Image (cartoon, rainbow, N blue to C red; front, top):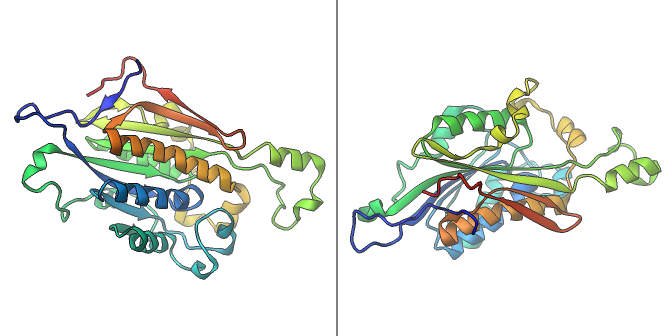
Length: 296
């Protein structure tokens, strides 16, 4: 039988012994290709479990016309804050509280402030039966942010850090000026065979102890990358030219993230460390927890 981490084991200092309840404090960094497709899924999930959570969207980007192809925005959203649009839309659609931060997360202080629960009523007099779990969902596509999130993971006592990444499609350098019907056979083949894969990694830290290694520990090249710049200094032209993504891949990536969150909300457990997927071939496969993983 595969190992499972149970985060809601009963508090045996109180009788009768009952399982604890979960209060997730979710900060989602990035509401672009994968992130925008993830928001309605999380919002609907939280509604089905009674909205006992805090959910904040963080992104400094604004909607552009090119975003309409694979992100959940419409033409009337162009020029407006992505995080603000999605927070308002799904707050109204599901009647739940969704906060937004209309800037990029580029320092630890900002990240700590976003996770603050000082003004949130959690559990009341039964707080000892509630597990408050900070969850950082990284839907970013740059190593500056991943390095910062890794540093945050190392600096806090408790955190579930879910990182999702997907492969970009291979396109000609001048694809924005040269239509697809003008591409060579080789260029079309390279495009058709790329941009379909991705992975999700769940890092977990509890009470100062790392239970599951975060993404940068599994892929150390993230930390070794010295050529990183802040998201706020990268032009939109650079992003779209270097990182074209597929709608189906973004939606598959969002579903892979939801798989972790839904198990956590439904069962209070984590049963996998990493998930890989191929959107074109239609498969998703998860790596079970190592046998030596503590289950507390």
